[in-house]
Image 1 (cartoon, rainbow, N blue to C red):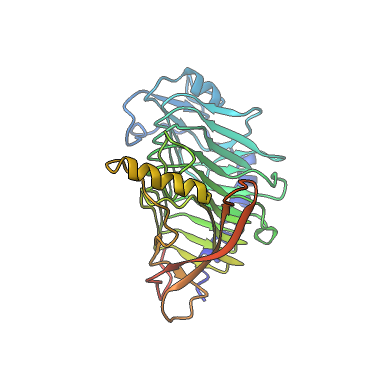
Image 2 (image 1 turned 90 degrees about the vertical axis):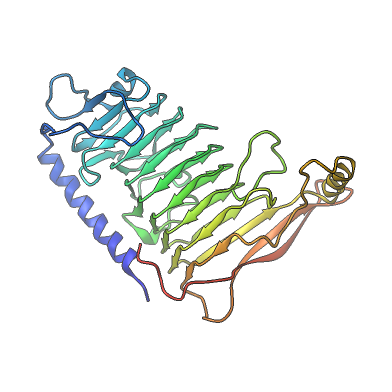
Amino acid sequence: MYKRPVVFNKTLVIGILILFFGLCVNSSIGTILEKEPICPIKNGNTLYVGGTGPGNYSTIQEAIDAASDGDTIFIYSGIYHPISNVHIYKELCIVGENKENVIFEKEYGYKPLSIRAKNVEIRSITFINFEVTNQVQYDNTVISNNIFLINNNAGDWNPDIMLIAGKNNEISNNIFTSTNPGSKRGPFNVVFFQCYESKFINNIIDGFKSGITAMDILDYSYYVDDYPRGNNTIEGNTFSNNSYGIRLSPTLYPKYHSKIINNNFIDNEKNAIFYARIPSIMDIIENLIKKFQSPSENYKLFDLTKKYWDGNYWDDYDGEGPQKISGRVQTAGLFNQFLLYDFSWVNFDLHPAKEPFNI
């Protein structure tokens, strides 16, 4: 049985806790860098948090308030305890000196870091009991190469990352783990809600109630006319020791194609489950009438057979044929919109991997 992500994460937790106590005694003095830190899309000035340099800021919020769009905020090694919520309301790259040594920690409860601007990047930081939230329709958010560590004091109802109705967002190369994997904190870990052309790639998610909870990300929604969603990619991740590896709650509308490919599903209580919502029979009839009246318009029917899954490794795969992914479909009644019909359905991974990927 492939166990690397589990062993890796337990070792990581111990290392971070040792590092935590070590930094309490020996904090960073902020060594001078030979060259300025670089963020891929930022061209502005660099502001510094921590260390001992003249003009350095003591808190990240002070640096954000002083920065301009396009600036980089570089954070020296140390443990930071924000006393209030952190609001990122400018186009910034926030990067730590080293993700193991730059620690944002909240001992009790959960502290949000709120993204309220487009073109925000967060890199190379350890977050302990922090929630990173991208507010509605802010695009081009990048959250990469970070560690999200949750202990038993964290709130049960807060996700580590929540992306809402944004385009071209990326969550990549992060580690999400818990000091007590057996506790299955939840219900959420990473939440995608109404995202479009976004990526969740090369992450490790271990020890949660739900590795990813994805709502209305697979396809264009029937219920929102103006904002597209779909064409997302969930690729190259390892989901291990979770109650659910992935929980999907999409409206299955085949206008945009999303992909869940080349992931590892290992030692989860249930590797994947989906809950599909389709319109009532009346909605489908109205859709057919519109298509008949305006043939040139792109009115498409709903498709529950569309294949989103491909090439994933499933530890419960029996080695024969496609891998079945169980789910349920719900729709409203013909004459009573409040009477809901619920029935079982399945999707398939037609080409399940025989061996786990080395992520």
